[in-house]
Amino acid sequence: MAELKPNGRLQAPPEFISVISSNHCARIRISDIEIIEQEGRRLHVITPDRDYSFYGSLNSIVTSLVDRAFYRTLRSMVINFDHVKDITGGSVNFVSGQSIILGRNAINKTKRAFKKYLMKYPPYSLWDPYQIMPMSVFESSEIDTDEGSKSFDENT
Image (cartoon, one colour):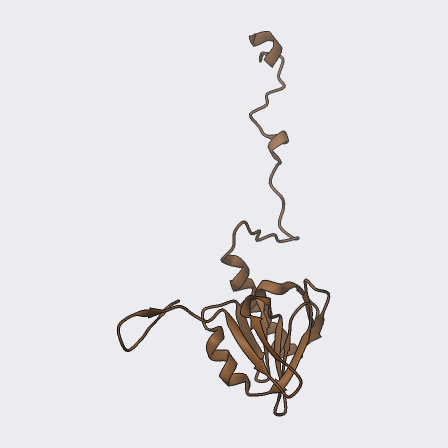
């Protein structure tokens, strides 16, 4: 969502974050980020292609991620639901093949948030394996097999 500047103009949210360290400088597209992890004073920004490490704070980057598909799983970790393949057991699996393991409370909260995220993008299924499945389209009651009814060939 665009922010209103003091001069009354709308400002679009940023598309990139800048990474500056002693070894390299880079611009990372926010939509490419899978995981952002704080480890002490060091920040790791993980994309499908590369892992960027630099000194910084997670809170300074989180402000750029508002109104996007990012979720803070832990105080020191943010994940991008756009890159999550599935959540099974205690791990979050990404499309790129990476996975992270979370504790019981964190994984339960992440699963609930991921379900809300998925409900925004139909078609979705509320499939319950213990629920009796309705008849399929081909087994519909509209097809009458009694002798008194005419078949499709007889109507033509």
